[in-house]
Length: 221
Image (cartoon, rainbow, N blue to C red; front, side):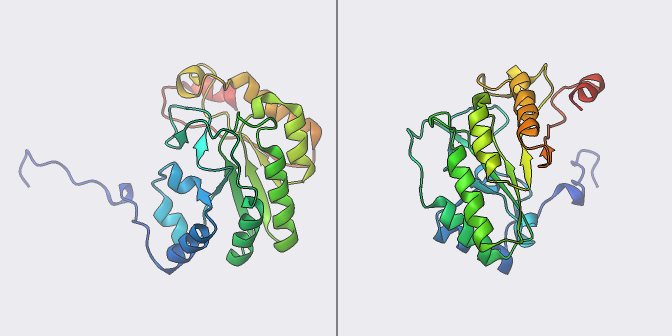
């Protein structure tokens, strides 16, 4: 190899392109019901691997987010209150057809809705429970602008896991996240959810590699 030639990329850096029977079936189920996935909307590089195993994360309340976080590829805009009222039913149908043991459902932020879409999400939980009682449900949601009433609405439907992401450490939050999101508000959302439903596990995540220090990571933990 020439000294000037670029080194080959390691095999583990490459991800498989979407394909195969399971991927095709999953895509068909979602397209028939006009359902969205964060896998596609956020351009996740692991889509091919996950879909081949029959795993996807359904994204509710449309494909347009009212927030504009700098790390996210989901479209940003103003949906002007438009909601597909059939989405809970169609989601339940898709989940039943896929026969899943565990499902993660996420959502765009909907600051244009009075309750942030919490009643829509709660109805989705109830619909899935009726048709797929064995499926455990994890809901990864936004901050609902910190509204306790919205959290109460969703948690009353009793998802198996409640998740809300810090996304990054406190110092980097103004750089990484939308100006309407805050580190302290996210912590408060997690605290309130735990207070409302102490038996429902509360989960959070954040990204690494944005310039955070070890001390900041420990502080976030």
